[in-house]
Image (tube, rainbow, N blue to C red; front, side, top):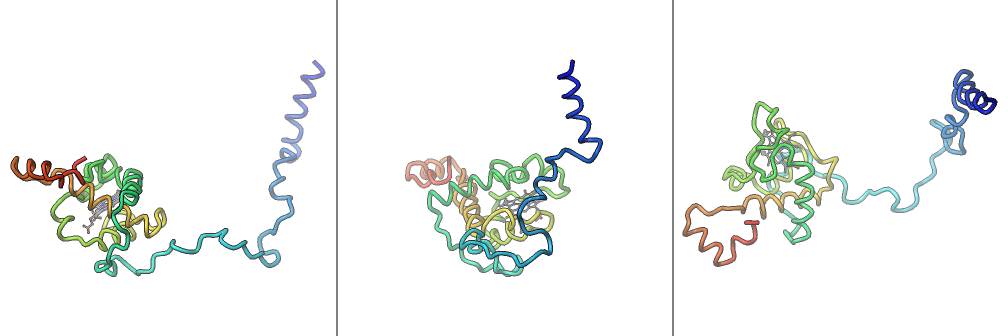
Amino acid sequence: MKKLLLIVCMLAIPTVVVAWPWSRDLMNQPSIKPQEGPLNTYPKDSVPVKGLWTKVVDRDATEGMKNPVAPTKKSIAMGRALFLTYCLPCHGTSGKGDGLVGKVFEMQPADLTSDYVKNDLSDGWLWGTITFGSYIMPRYDYDMTPSERWDVVNFVRNVLEKRMTAKSKEERASQVLSGSAKKGGE
Ligand code: HEC
């Protein structure tokens, strides 16, 4: 009984008086408080400053940009992982614009395998769209580094757009036999 009373006291009293005694521990520690003293400089390379920032001002300025990242297996694999994380909800697994979240928009997300995206949009514009967003689509420059955004472009170009491009049985057969369907036709 005594033990129980002790436990009840321990639980109840600090709450009533102020708060748990340890709830202020984080504040009462040797650290620089807001507006106090000069900040120490950070150890070298502890804060990333390279490769994060986008140097262009808006999407129009990205139109003529050349893709500096070669579509290597590694880049495409990275692009795939990022696509499945960031683009899939709206553009769908296959990029056709049929993702579940995309359905809430009045305008369907673009079909990334369409001739429009394939032929009319430059690599730079794709990168610019990911960076700055589009008319409805949100921007993703805070979520991916510039080079990761190029990885997504590589995935769109080299996998999504190349899936099943054949328009006839003959074309499909010749693609498969020549191996050119392998690249995209997973
Ligand atoms: C929240 C939903 C959403 C997400 C997530 C999203 N998009 Fe979009 N996207 C849209 C919508 C809606 C459109 C069509 C309307 C527009 O252009 O804003 C679109 C259009 C586009 C276009 C066509 C732009 C143009 O100029 O016509 C491209 C390319 C594109 N998205 C690529 C991507 C890529 C790559 C990702 C992943 C990084 C992505 N989107 C993520 C909703 C989304």
